[in-house]
Amino acid sequence: MFERPRGTNDWTPEDMVKRRYVESAFVGVAESFGFREIQTPLFESLELFAAKSGPGVVEELYAFKDKGNRDVALRPEFTASIVRFYVNELRSLPKPIKVYCYGPAFRYEEPQKGRYREFEQLDAEVIGGATLASDAEVIALAIGTMRAIGLKQVRARIGHIGMLRAFLPFGPADQAKVLHALDKKNVPMLEDELRRLTHEELTDPLKRIIGLHGDAAILDEAQKLLGGKGGEAFGYLRQLREQLAHYGISPSEYEFDMGVVRGLDYYTGMVFELDSPNLGAEKQVGGGGAYTLAEVFGGEPVAQTGFALGVDRLVMAAEAEGVFGPAPALDAYVVPIGEAVRGKAVEILTTIRAAGLRADIDLVGRGPSKNLDYANTSRARYAVLVGEKELKKDAVGLRDLKAGTQREVPVRSLVEALTKA
Ligand code: HAM
Image 1 (cartoon, rainbow, N blue to C red):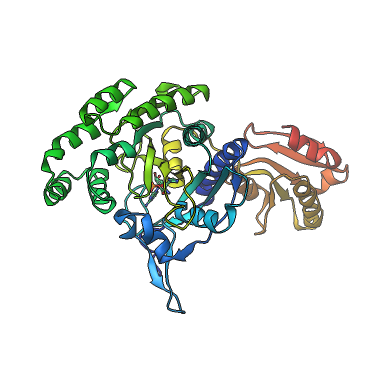
Image 2 (cartoon, protein in one colour; image 1 turned 30 degrees about the vertical axis):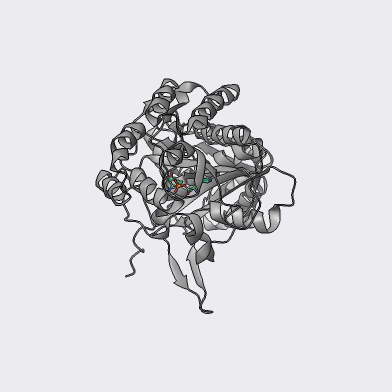
């Protein structure tokens, strides 16, 4: 009767197991890196996102007026909110501020596989650390999360937006338009912008620079193409490579890519993206880099860097790489053999649950054999058969549903038998 809004999803219990797995892999690595969880609102004042996110994001905002006639927008990402929180409340804390959060974000995009209007991000930011050390830390966290999820094919591409900005002799607003065209890999749009800015001679070198990717050798090539502009960026990327090696990140896990432009306007330094080769058009599972936002929101200049990963795409990448096995949904399914033993069966069920195991019982009144079918399809590890005959001996039948074997177990050692197995 009612259609789900376009670009949104319903997630089944099986989907949620995978989504929680990805979230907890990220949370585990982030906590091990000393990041701490925060939360910010789902909606903010419209200006917060309009201030510096750039045309790509502003066009896609879910913006509306609330009942007090205030312009608000659903968050399209976390970074602007986190920096607002930092400038207003966290900046007196000892630096660096290392925080993470995760949850839904909203962009009015054209939906397709892996691109939704409501999607979920995992986000981490470092504010107020030294630039190089912080950039290396966030890349290590992003790659560490890929490893923890079990993704072996995802690669990072690392570039430097400062290098590109140094090459563009325009003010920030015009730079944003050219960078937007580069990010969309839209050559006609790029040509139009450069014609408008009467800098058509930049078209070819720009196309060649953003086409450069590979190992550290391409940094020399790019440096030559830029003709001396943006020189610090290349030295910086070489240093970053050394830092990453100390983290145990091998050059096979990333490449340098001068074409990493990013779709958001606030980046000013190192930028990076992570791709899964298995996802087709929407293969980017994450992205981030060093940015300047605190200053825009009234704070003092401070190094800021971070990234966000897309949960929806990480789950798809993990599915494609065969990371998920068929996980048992229940430890035990309790089957009362006859209504007379139902009370006792519930007591046994309650003991199993109290031990922290996942246990369920028939709520429909099925017969024993139908109940065993149900236990099998609901992927329980064990069926606990509660019958009058066994109860007289203070025992139950314990059926291993995978092996198809059954034995009698005293009620008092049932939890132990379920845990040991
Ligand atoms: P972003 O590249 O816009 O960066 O988004 C990060 C990730 O979110 C993408 O790589 C993608 O996996 C996922 N994502 C974005 N849009 C969608 C969508 N419509 N459907 C599904 N997944 C999507 C940021 O948002 C920055 N705030 C990252 C950052 C943090 N930079 C510095 N700190």
